[in-house]
Image 1 (cartoon, one colour):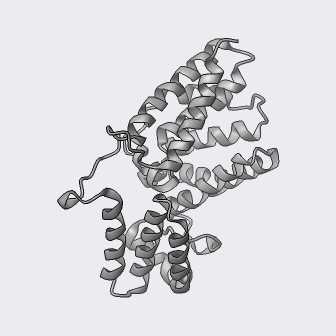
Image 2: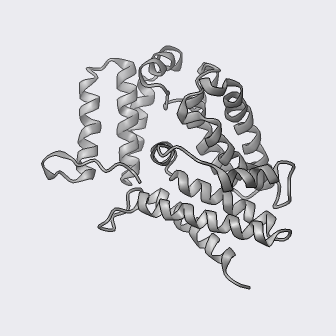
Image 3: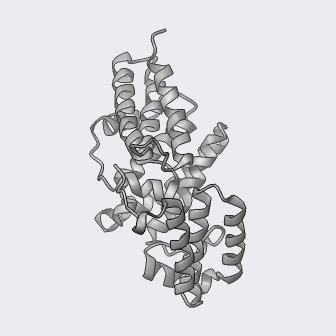
Length: 270
């Protein structure tokens, strides 16, 4: 479950987050690399609250300040990852795996949603080249937020999507991974912050993808994957909705609802 912070003086969460972003920008005293990071945070808060026009205005301001050649490495030193890059991939060091994961995971997920085989294959190639293979090479030296355990589950979604619904070489080991994995608790909120998706929902999607492929050949495996996916979504429900019914992140909740609907349809008797 996500950590529940309580703003001071009973301030509404939305107001507190906006004031936090504004104060961070002021406190930077216009030191450019700190200001870039503060503006990125401010835009992210506005985006999550649905204030898209305001967020775009802040991003325009950030782009007028940000110089990747000057700022990327110092941002990495101060903040672990540089969230400001988009077309400046050559400036990212090979070892900056959190930054690469932060950039490429949303891109690859968007490509997969196009539901075109060519786009899905491109997503798999991008993620494998820039995230999964470098994380595997780094081994235990990789930052926990860019671990192989996280990469494996995301790769499953990409492999299933690029296979066109057909069995692929690693299918058996991927099924075993999803049914036996033990993920760190912090994955849940890390993904929510970086990708607008609860980690448990992404795992449920991986189970859904595998269940669709295995359904024709093994009803038992498919049933186990569906059960595991629904179990994951129980975690998502607690992460994404407060006790009073307030939705924590509308984008993540919409994604959760979509995967829940698909899993329930798949589990319904024919």
